[in-house]
Length: 462
Image (cartoon, rainbow, N blue to C red; front, side, top):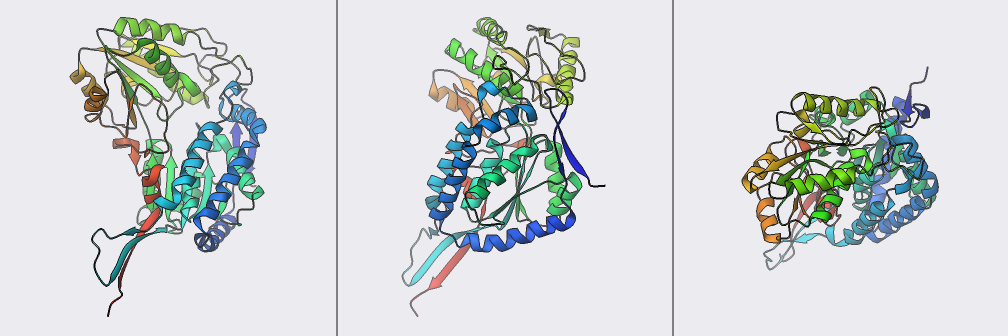
């Protein structure tokens, strides 16, 4: 009997899509096609590669009317927010724009008469992208486009929860005539993925997902010497200072906490507020949160859909229950249809009287819950922000830029925001520290992670 991957929709629990898992022969054939195609693709001028990427983008955007409800059915995001193509456009356009300069050979900094010396940036070969379900297009495009622009071939394995996204990428590339084998979407189970990574046939893998998943990737790749890009867990903090523009901080932090049902890599999961403005901030935050409408994501009135899977919602319920047992206070307590154990539908929640003995303040939630703590000063805030095994982003809310920089310099994180959060700028490198992973995506530095340096030391005068 053929093994399949089933996509269970969070909307109603139905099987929305089902696809057969690739056979071992099909996987081997895909890798061989990728290797053969990559050699030819690497000889294609960068400008021509860029034309393919921009055409693919246009083809993908043309599918918006089909893709938006597909996303809702697959992982629960409300249709009112459209697709992810604002960010996909920005990231694709930027990485295409900078490619020629970013991939240009770097001459030696100390010229020598009679010699030509430079470092060329060669493609790695075959890049595997293991993409997550939470932002299925945005997270995938972070590596797909720059990897292809750098001259690599790409094999995409998308999350089971968003099976159809890989197919959409394949359709877009096929429609614009990308050479066969340069990009391939495959459906694999975990064992097949581990076997492929351990085969030595993959030159680089980019994985976005859990810390446990990242450890499994490292273990599978051990001994192959392939390079890794890992964006793993997060517990992103915010610090609100006394001089913050309060209405701006409240509105943006509520959105940064609860957008996409809190299922954001760089979403806000804990907030530290200076005691001078704590009461004002909490009052505004609670009032703003109560405006959410939880329900069927296919309904235009819905502003928060179900979580992607019931088990994710149950984790949030457990974190809330534990916090309440330990003295936290819940402020929303919204009544939502089907909000019960075993259901992906979950109301947003705001907790105060929290501390770092509660899992909701230290362990990743990845859902619509947040704890807000009062702090006396910067020292206390910085210590609490750093009291986490993760470090993807941190946001600081103040009108004093120099003060924000001084605090940011001491926070263990990959990105420091001031007066904004939950955003990825493709001109800045996307990276993390501690258990959030390693490697780098986007910006010119992202290209360095998708190429290998090759030195040329040429004596011309003999």
